[in-house]
Length: 299
Image 1 (cartoon, rainbow, N blue to C red):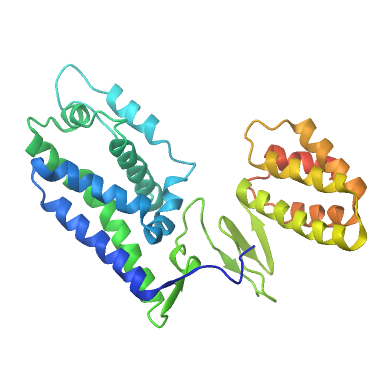
Image 2 (cartoon, helix red, strand yellow):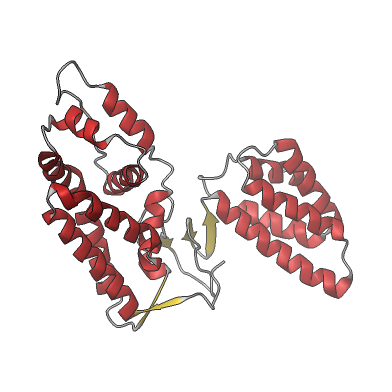
């Protein structure tokens, strides 16, 4: 759930971050080969470490439909006996293409890519100056142009605001970070990162959202525990469920057992877990944590 005390960013802070991004991009596009590497590293450092840019770009980094390592390896494997014979394709979808490029650039910045060899194989470049020019035109421009579109949209959409929330900077329909609204929204229901709203109910599309909801259930249970001396067993079982929600190797039997213990020891947990299961989206419907909870509930 979104906290009402969520951190807000001043308009000046946001505009400065976006303006700095544009300035770094300008430096990179004009850089000669001697300074291109430093300008490129500066761009990625700003994207990864600036608080505001982190919010905008984090969904690109965690887009699970993209595997930049596999894309790079596949491209390199297409190279024939002559330079410049390698081939690759970029996704037509704006989100996927931008996510792929960002993830690939992070690999480059982390020295996990042989960039000179990549350029020679894909573009037939014969020198560092040629490499910098082609990279800027073929890859960097495609990435930075899309990001700048989005930064401009944020500023337009928040034109009347002197303080800008995280949600206002993550309005784009990324695969792992979308906000889709349909039907009337009642009360104070707000979709969290990775969830959508249909009618007045938020549905969860990521396991981290399931873990967050379990943490909220634990908080409510702890409050009930203080007031009514509820068994600690239920709280310990919820703790195990929270851990399992973040563990890709969690065993179905262990999840089901923990959920069963929590349900048995607390009527509140049963009610909350049933509600959780009713709000599960397709993104996590087949996950171990969801299947285990459903099994314990007999759903």
